Image (cartoon, rainbow, N blue to C red; front, top):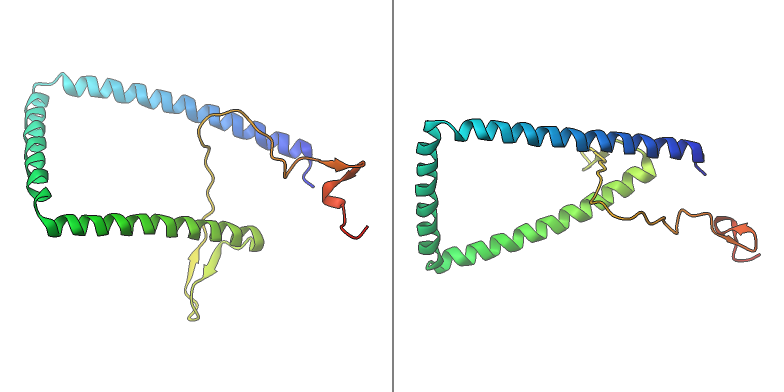
Length: 155
């Protein structure tokens, strides 16, 4: 069982760093906006913008022309399927690696009999904001005054 104060300290550390990240992201956005204003106020920007518009038109013409190529469309469909399958495979691999690390605490894994190994990188990130919902699996649930994790089937 993890010490509650240790968990509270870790949560507070995460909250502090998350606030720092949010603050820094805001400052970065403000700086990018200032830089964009400077760039777009220059006469050279007009030339770049005109060329960008011409390029967009040329790309659209190419896209329309490629839509009439059956082989191209077939290949694009196959590419989409392969990318989707790759994403699925990467998610399964990630879950397997997290499970491997949780069990072994090893930071590398041997991939074949010749001893080739790869580093195991376990990463965490915060998702979108939402209401906190405590996990039922981590809660101290008791049945007749006995913690669930200490119950036995035969007694």
